[in-house]
Structures are given as structure tokens and as C-alpha cells.
Length: 323
Image (cartoon, rainbow, N blue to C red; front, side, top):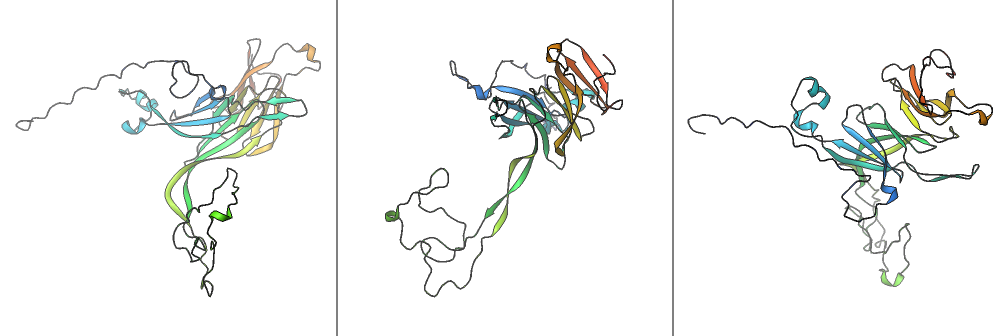
């Protein structure tokens, strides 16, 4: 700059076009590398804000991603589109956490193996900085809470190893070789003979372990509810109600209404199972709550029809309001 003249900033152009690729798994794959079936993505869902992304795979795992580019321009993409704000970069998501949602099960009454594959994921309303979501396989629905918690550590132990003195520092591992499940190989010849030995005259005072809370945080996923044994057929849909308290789950012949806080009871609101299964002509393929009216929901059938029902009309909604 000469004479106090400011150099005008170069105009920021539109972002480079995205390169679209097909992928069924996460991570870079080399040519000819075999894809493991448990790593194949089977479900994907954005939350209402678009800032979080959840994916489920055939191995029963749920992986969460968090959007990172919103912090740069201080607003959501939806708000900026309304303000005609020029977006100069594409959305970017970073890995947040993952957890094992479902395990393979076996139905002994029906001699049926139940896969751990995640078939549907739905986000619930957030509260106190925690994330809530529903995940389901073919039979069991689970309600998860994901939040950051401060790490707690043990700072002091009672007795030091080897010299018999009281310990004043963090616990350190001994030289004992440990096995995977907490077992310990017995090798008395290689261990000192005075381990945990007390000094002459004893110890004047007992130092109890002190648990301290560090500044480190870690994401913890906890299963709050398990909604099981309510469907005879494979679950094809779950949908959260706009009231934030209830949700529905649907299989081929029935739709059940649940309360998020009650896992041992559900209400059957749609039942298309005929008295004679030979008279069955269609099955339920999908069900969804209205985005804003908590009493309205719709479900589709294998005949290509969509039925709209009103929960205020009847407890059992086999007769639809509109077709």
C-alpha cells in the first residue's frame, strides 16, 4: 500500500463444482480391494438443522458426523439462502463419534436369525446440548443419547508398588503381563518378593484414592430405551412425531404408536392383517408423521396407494381419512 491507499479484496468466486462418486463404505479404497459386507452403509439421515449426519451400516454401527463450515460464516445454510447470501464453499462434515447400536440376535420361538444391520435412523429433538436419535434393525428399536462428558481419573492410590510406601502420584502399571480379559500370567520367579510390602511399624495413615475431574471431554453414547417384541414382521419405517414425545414404527401389516419414555408398551393404530392370510392383497411399505400436525400421519402400500389418517378420529385407524 502506497499513500494510504487500500488494495481492494479480490472477489470470492463460486466454489468449484463437486465431484460426485458412488461409494457404499467410508474411507479410501484401493483398486481391487475387497469391501467387507459389515462396512456397507445401510441407513443415512440428516438432523433438522443439517448440521449433523448419522449413518448406519450392516455391522450394526452408527457413525455421527458434524458440520464444520457453519462456524466460518456464522449461520445455517438455510438462513443464508433466505437472505440471498452467497455461499463460497461446499458443506464439510467431520467425524464426531461412533457406537455399536445393534448386535446379531436369534429368535428361538421362530428359529429366525435377526441381523444387526441398521435399517432406519431418525433424529429426535436436542436438549441440554445432547443429541438424541432412534435406530432400528429388523425387529428392535433403540433410543440413544450422545453427549460430551468430562473424563474422571484416579490421582492417588493407597500403597505404592515395590517399596511399601504410600503413593502420592498417579497409579502406574506394574510389570505383570496381563491377558485380554483381565487375567494375569502367574510368573512368581520374575516378580519382586516385596510387592505391596508394608514398612516396619506399619503405615501411619491410609491414603484413599482421589477421583478428579479433568478438563478433557469425551463423547459418550448411552442407550436410554429399547423397544422390542412389538413386531412380528420386519420393521420398514420409524417416524418421530412433531410433539417430540411419540413416534411410530411400521412393519408389513401393522403400525404401532410409542411414547419415547415408555419402552414396554405400544398402541396398535393400524392393522391390515386379514383373518385369513390367503386373503392378503397388499402390505404396508412406509409410514410417516406429518411434519407439523401431530395428529396426522400417512402410510403407503404395495399397491401404490397412500392413505392419510387422523389420530383424533379413532384409536384404531384402519379406516383412513383420505386415499
